[in-house]
Length: 116
Image (cartoon, rainbow, N blue to C red; front, side, top):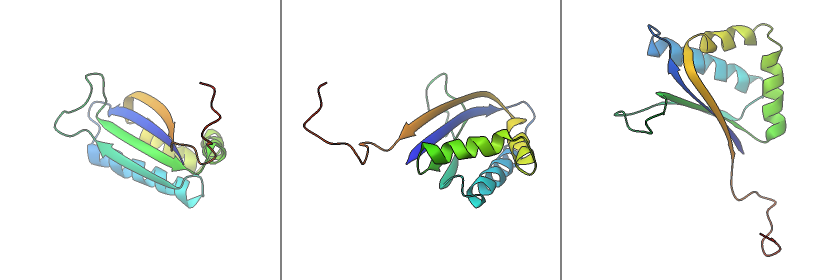
């Protein structure tokens, strides 16, 4: 599995529940289209985290980079209905950062022949 992480803060005067509803609708659309396997939205608790951390953390789970690329291609069409879902989330956030992780060790990983 690959995990596409999204970190953000809300713009001033954005309702946290409106944001959460928008994220859940957007991610549900991507899942319905077969473009992700799962998703999550979380919020920083008790102010704990790195000083430069954001309040919200979301992630998408995909089978592989090909599925993630298909999701990016779908969103990048900027056509309906995905454009409305994307805008409903993107218009509410600031300080956005992204990371990409994978399960480890990789399923194809062999041991004993590494040279470093």
